[in-house]
Length: 480
Image 1 (tube, one colour):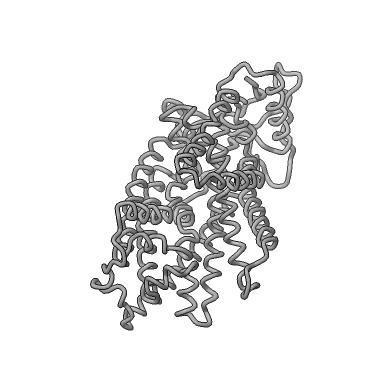
Image 2 (cartoon, rainbow, N blue to C red):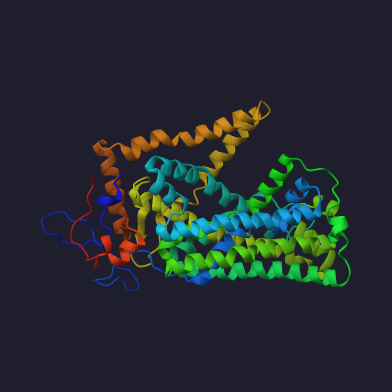
């Protein structure tokens, strides 16, 4: 693998001097390519509104519609459950403030990976990248897409569970469609995010509005202080921790905007602004959505429901109860789009640092999208292997929890030899260099170039604050 410091991130011109066999130039295609003085790079097309929808769309998934009962179950009372939701939003706000500062100080795409690599070094960053690419993102996409397909098919199969084959085909079609959209245009992907995030907020606004109507009509028995803080069990410290964790999971995704920092318009202003707008809004929506649930359901009814929003719709919306499963489907569809958009930048950033094969750092010349990184994020082999592994692991789950934790650590540590063999080892055999070189040339034939490393500040002002015109070079790509 080649480190990004050895990569030339510009269009290769044929007939370079001193090189009898120049790398092939990108073949022409429809649409105007970059001009002679224009650098091929990821474009800054994410404004403030799109930035807010990336955060909100990645946070608000199916959880708030389906199962807020985990917080209530471990809290032991309605009042304490609502307090946990507010506390979860407050802690998320603290973390997001830290990330706002990190994003401004280290203006690189890649989020957690970029910051860990910058602060703790290559090995720590690679282990984070290894676990994310191997397990976290592919399986999360698989779960979210299956949730989407199940709720889309629910009206078609109202009296039974949708067939597994139909759910899998629809989820694969959803992943392929959104991968194509993200590969075609960043602007299309952000527009989809804006539209479907708006749909989520409209659905939750409907729930909150109906809840306020219930309150004005006097249906707020469970919210009276005397009832809200009546405990049906005394929560222990462990129960409170589990309740808080359940609420924190619903806020996951708040840091995803930092994965696309280099594509933000004026990130020094828009990154903090988007965080300051989005986190309080999500906290407000989550808290009052739960308040609305308790105007229609008792704690016992909520705990017995596997899809709280659907039960809420059936009790209060009558003929329009179909809105709730549709809202869950819209929410998960937008979540898949946001996950693809941000997680692909993690693979892209890792390849640019030399921790993944360099062809994953390629972007399309005309579309300016990281298509190879996007294709890696929908690899269906990885979740299959992962599910088989955990099915095998369940046999030993009755022994003890430390064994489960130990296996998880072992999975992460398997990246250590890969790091030293693939990244740290400089004198690799020639066959490895030939493979990476052939992949790079194949990508160039498909109109890709390697996107170079460099912070946003260097792109704007050049290294050490010096203006840099970033001219097109006629030198071929070098293999270290």
